[in-house]
Figure 1 (cartoon, rainbow, N blue to C red):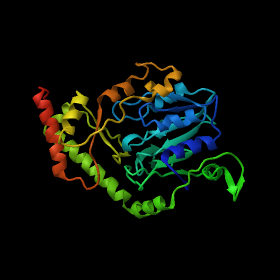
Figure 2: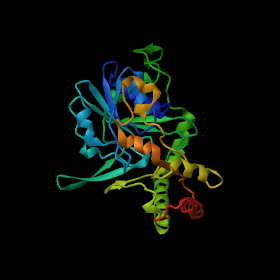
Figure 3: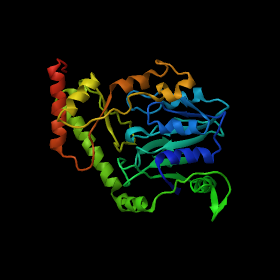
Figure 4: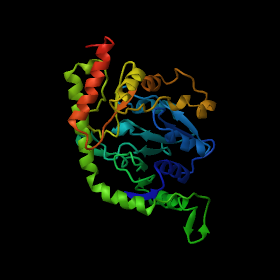
Length: 330
């Protein structure tokens, strides 16, 4: 695919929507259980974010609900491959004129094997939709030293417009075809990414090994009957940008672990449809129950290349101790 470097993953989404002409009166469908930018980019252009609920086990958008939320005003669907696993895009059917945009910020290197016409085909995150939007924020599986992003697409006309928009709408020196922004990929960040890119597959495999080890350690202690570990769909390659479990008494567990055991985070504590910035959309608590439930239960445990078995053992032992002290056992 062709590619266009930009200043951040947020700008990748924003400029892609802008290049497609998304604006006031349009609707963009996405998930409520993700980082704010996946929906705010549509709102910044005057379009209306429309949210569909998520799957409780994969945390990804329920593609079967997209069709029911599509209207004549729908211009795009932003499919967020959350935490490192692809949305099952082979099940998604969109009307003509509705663009599929993949948010690959957390899933670079993720794949799905699907059967079509009796043959096994390989789908790669960022290579299915009209455009794939990448983030190279330092914490990502492939991270720069600072903010950086990219749009990948087979549509050269789309990429051409994004290249203009990222450079103040300029098609040549001091000639501006339209209003744009300053969002070029910094050369220093590009150099860092080129150096790290050959290691991405190795790092992703190591993350998968760490996830498997977490699963085994928790199973040995009976924790998998208390803590819900991530589900990997058949045929999927999960790259584990985050290792996210669902835990009873989540906030207590997080505080317990943060007191000398490990850092851990909640992604995400308030679904987008309940964010104050989107209150004008009219959503209420209970409208998207799965996203709301996940926001109350999920906890991201440490996972990174170079993590040792002893470090994981210490975390799992602490989780087992936490639940044992509170009378929660298998």
